[in-house]
Amino acid sequence: MIVIQSNIKNTGESMPDKRVYSLLTVVVVLVQPLQPSYAHGFAGKRFFPATLSIDDPYVADEGDFMVDHIKGPDEDGIQTGTTAYSFEYSKRLTSRFGLSVGGAYLHLNPDGAASANGFDNFEFGAKYLLHVDPESETLMSAGVDLDAGGTGSRHVGAESFSQLTPTFFFGKGLGNLPESMRFLRPVAITGAVGVGFPTRGSEPRSVQWGFTLQYNLQYLQSFVKDVGMGTPFDRMIPIVEIPMQTCLDKGCGGDTTGTVNPGMLWFSHWGQVAVEAQIPVNKRTGSHAGFLVQVHFYLDDIFPQTLGKPIMN
Amino acid sequence: MKYLFFTLFILVVLQPVPALAHAFPTQQTPGAGAELSEPPDKVSILFDGELEASFLRLRVVDESNHTVSTGTAHLAPKNNRMLETGLRNLGPGKYHVYWSVVSRDGHRTQGDYSFRVNK
Image: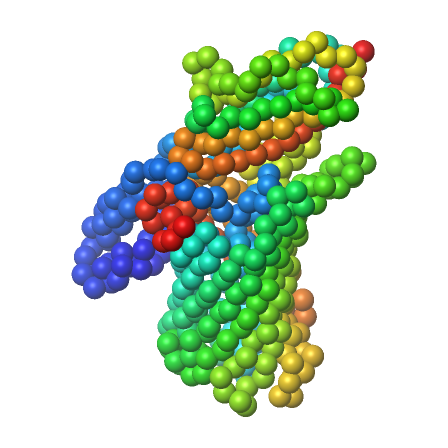
C-alpha cells in the first residue's frame, strides 16, 4: 500500500488516473488463491478484534490504516490540533512470533502559528504469543517496540532519539461466568503495560499502559442468547479503550496523560471498520475531544496461503 | 492520501464478500438460550461460509452430560453451509450444543450454547 502511495506522488497524474491505478492495484492484490491457514485473535470460541489504541494480545498477519485527530497542548503548552494518517503492517514469522512496522504522517495545526506536515518516527515491533487457553478465553503475549529516532521529520516534533518499550499484553473473555451472569459473558478485557526507555539519558522513562472493555454482540447472539439481531448488528462490538501514559522520572514523575475512547467495531471476513471518540482524561492531555477511524485488514484471512501465512510453521 | 484511503475503503467494504476465512454461525435452530415447548428433532446451524465436510463436529448433551444427538454431524443436503445432527426424543430439561467446523479455506471455529425444553 505504501508503494501505491509513492507511485501516485511521483507520477503527477491527474486524479482520475490516480484512482484507476489505486483500483487496479488493490484488485490485483486482493484477488489471490485461497487455501488453508491459521487463525488470528481467537481463544476458543472467543474472537478478539484488533483494537485501535491498545495493541492486540496476539500475533497476526494484518494491516491497517487509521485517521486520528485530537487537539491538545504540545511540549511547549501550545494548543495544537494534530491529525495523523497512520498505517501498520504485521507479519508472522511463526504461528507465535511476529514483526511489525508502522508509521504516521502528521498534520499539526498549532494555535497562532503556522501549520506543519511530515512523518513521525517509524515504529518497529516484535511480539511473541506466550499463552492461549481456549477454556478460559485467555491470551498473553510479550513484545518490544522500537520508536526509531531520527526517522521522522523534526518539523512535526519527531525525536532524534529512540525509545525501546518492552510490553506485556493480555486478553481475557468472561465466557465462563455462571449462568446467573450470562449476559456478561460477551464481555472481554484486553490490556497492555510496558515501560519506555529512551536512548537519551536526559529524557524521562514512562509507563505505557491501558486496557479495553469490549462487548461482543456476535458472542451474545451465538453463544448466550439469540436476541434476533440481524446484519450488521450481529457483527458489532461496542468498545471502550483507555490508553494511558505515566511519566516516571526527570521532573515529571507521576504525570499521567491519556484518553477514554468509546466506540464501535464492526467485523467481517476480510477485516473490520472501527470508529472511536477520544476524550482527554485531564487538562494535561487536552481539553478537546478527538476521533479515530480505522480500516483493518485480516491478511491471514484474505491471503491465507501467501501473504497471510507464517513464513515458518 | 485521502483518495487512497477512500478508494481502499470503498473497494473493500463494497466488494461482494466470498465465503472465505472463519465461518461464524448466522442462524441456529434451536437458538442460543431458546425455551421450547416442543422438543426439537434436530439441531441445525447455518454458517456464513462453506464448510469442510471432513471436519464437522456437532454434539448435544443433556444435564448429565449424556449424548442425546444421534448419528454423526453432517452437512444438510444441497447446503454446505448448514451443519446438522439428529436428536433423540428429548424430555424436559436443559441441553448443551457443542460444535466445531473448518471453513473451506482451512480456518477453524468452535462454539457452544444451550437451550431448554419445557413441558
